[in-house]
Amino acid sequence: MRILTNLSKAELDHLTNQPTAKAMIEKVKTEGIYIPEGDALAAAAFTAVRDSRKREDTLDLSDGGKAALEKNMEAKETYSRQEQIKKKIAELEKELAEINGQNTDPQTEQSAKANAVMQQIALLNMQLVQLQKNDSDSGTV
Image (cartoon, rainbow, N blue to C red; front, side, top):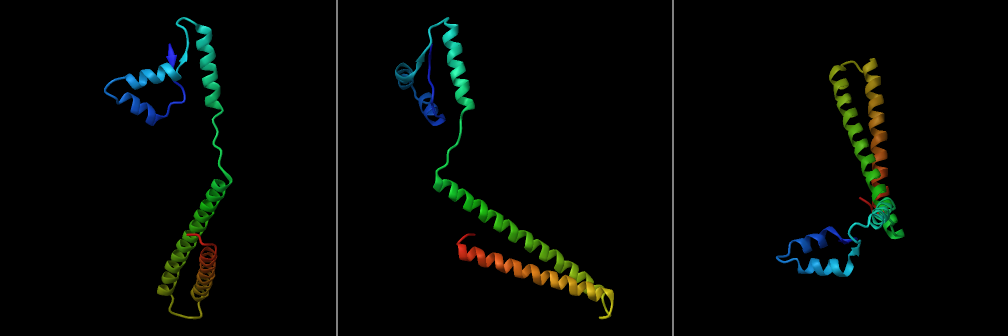
């Protein structure tokens, strides 16, 4: 029996979609591993080698690829942080509108709450502007 190894999915599709099997037969004859019929030891050795290769598969990234991946992850984190700040600002603005809708007297506890919420919104807006400035300076997002 002959076995083909290191065959990509695209190559296998190309070989199996041919009207004749000539190219596949040639490839099996030239690149296939031959295991005699009934040779259980050779078959066991082949499967052991194949299984060990499957477990040893790794992905190696070049330094440039690692840097690009880290930059992409950093950009996503920054974008995510900006989205979190925007959501928090929207929540606080909604809360402020509710407080202002209930408040008629400027000397009440509601006024103090409204002032605190406005300060939080201002602080978050400053953080958002700073993040956006850092992004524009670094050339991301």
